[in-house]
Image 1 (cartoon, helix red, strand yellow):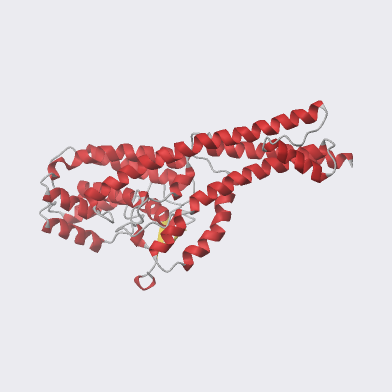
Image 2 (cartoon, helix red, strand yellow):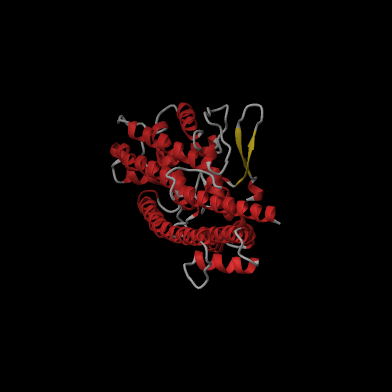
Length: 371
């Protein structure tokens, strides 16, 4: 019987330790790491939300359902941590001699919630009581600091997403952005507009890897999304560099593209989304067809945007940029069930196929009849 009490006490210590590590990784660690407890909470919540989204008959209803996914998961995660601490100390109290198990449960709950209606004599038992109370207060304090930080990052993200509608329309479109710039006779200064987006992508990578629930937090308006905004910005920069014939310094657009595909790739890494780390076109295909590219160029030409004469070279240049972010963009758009947007969520990604011999990742896109 003594061995059973020792084993229970040891398991309780491990359970509390796992809880502390999980809370530290989620709330304190300023880098993207996968955590078993947090991941399990998201997967458990998806068992409910997944079937509900599949039953939704319209995107608006699916969006309303998905808007609750991250907040509900966070609440579940909080209660999971508290339950793990309560269970861990209950086992430690029982292993230390508090009998029966029901009495150990009451003592653990009273200590965790700092209610103080249950106590025990003895130095070591009281030390455990104080330790559990400190852990409970510490979790609450961390959450009080965590939630405002997350919503501050959310507001900063959404400010740029909202402003993009002024430039690129709704849903955001690379062609729409370039056409509006041409109509306002500001195409020559287009390159400078990418500088703020380079910083936006840098902040996106930092916030969405260290504060993982932000990935699933949806925009206030159902037709907006951080991932479709990211796709529109990257496609605009890629079209500007490859097809538009303007003698300007193109470095801001190049830096924006690099910041963008690095950010999307590192966010995708946290969800084990496979993609080629160093892709090159045409060895790795992209989801945009040559016909779609030509249609976009035709729309730009009709609007008076100066284009390069060699569209074959322009197509290769565009594909060379797009291949860097095509897979992460499509997979993340499918993951968060983003609203419709051309060249991102409209690709109807049904999966990702990886070739074992080469490590090449290919997005599986549904046929038109399946969309």
